Length: 317
Image 1 (cartoon, helix red, strand yellow):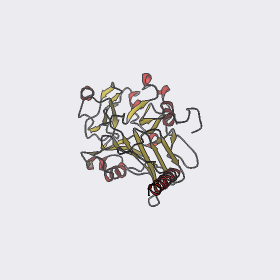
Image 2 (tube, rainbow, N blue to C red; image 1 turned 45 degrees about the horizontal axis):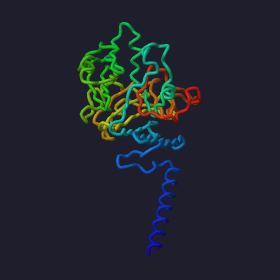
Image 3 (cartoon, helix red, strand yellow; image 1 turned 135 degrees about the vertical axis):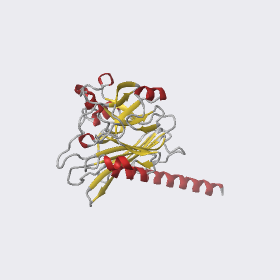
Image 4 (tube, rainbow, N blue to C red; image 1 turned 180 degrees about the vertical axis):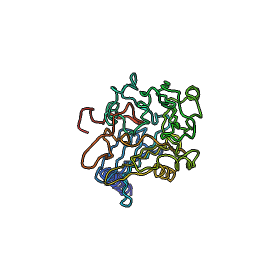
């Protein structure tokens, strides 16, 4: 009886090991702990043909899907990100922190990701362009606790971007505010370390910002947005545009998708040629028909997670 029991246990162990290995070969996550992460090590899956990318470690889980629609022609990327409690959430990652706004120190997003081993990233608010224009109002701009600008526009202006703000805290919390709702000093007093100015706010307190969605970003273009379900659980979206396979869309398309995913807040980032999505040092999105092209150089990226598995900066992208 004891021998039979031991044999059955051995068979079950071998069967489980085989199923586990088969799952990994198909790109499925290996066994995760109760918190939804690996106990140790890293798992990476990249399937460009089928549009699926996955990453898991003891503190981070990322799952990206490329979605395609024929009529109207759209291609977009949905990235769900989970950060373990106590780990570092999404943050702004500068190519050169000491010379952040200098045009000469801008770099392609995928190269910034490789430089710092950033697992996942999207485009930013392209604030460095506004900071270089002396007569412009750049918005409330804070990076790593340093104020770069406290000049913004009044709420409700006709201009796009309207310079609404996305504030990020060290514990991974995010909040959205109207352009002139807080001063730069007030953000620092509240403990925010990064503040982006672009907008508009897509979702606030679980509700669509209907007024802004009708007013801003209605043309068909490339788009990027970030949303948060709760602290530690985020959604990112990138929509390709102005190419044959994807004509792009207005910001309301992203807003509605983020709301469907359960996001309590959503924020529109810079689109057009700035829009991008990067995984393990590779740009996933397409920007031009018939040619592999990187999104424009920028001063920083909105990224999360670190790994030593990324390729070198000089390697082919």
